[in-house]
Image 1 (cartoon, rainbow, N blue to C red):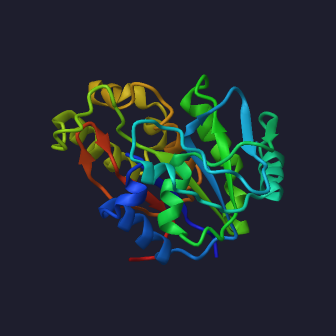
Image 2 (cartoon, rainbow, N blue to C red):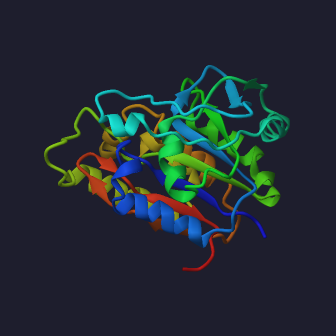
Length: 258
């Protein structure tokens, strides 16, 4: 069976310990998927120059944020790494050299979600960095080269947010901003229709999209997952809610029927 592919809106790091609707959504989706042999996560929070993968046997938990309660900094996600998967990723990507980092750990874009999906931390995890100097088509092309991993029981997971404008975000008023809701709906419509070219060239989608993606690091993980979609594979949405100027919408590609 081909492993589904997954994009998750990860949002606030506190989602890892709040046990809220988003945490429950991640937990429930894991129960619907076959358990993977390993996870390759493309997280918004590892920006690199060139292509890099983590190659640590035991990647540390990175607390890449500030100003949060001590309980969040106390979280450890001790999943093993997989140097073998790191080497496999490097071998599959033929368009450029993928360098392997033996010291890099797992950032919150990865562990905050996986702690809900696989709380036993018993699935090996590797991260792939994002070179945000490159255009969307570059990242989509790398995603295409990783397609074989789905037949090797690897869950490829992008972690970011389709709509992510922290400059406009209100911590005091979670009411969705009108432009953010419009953009989330438009992106979901285009994903459901398989309009990958338009989604890769997101800056051509109008003013709402330009507000939604002021910088590309939270959007690009979606492109890796869309690149893995096979012909006639459905896209399913969950956690589809906008909080202020941030969309938590998540996308399952090729998943089992609900």
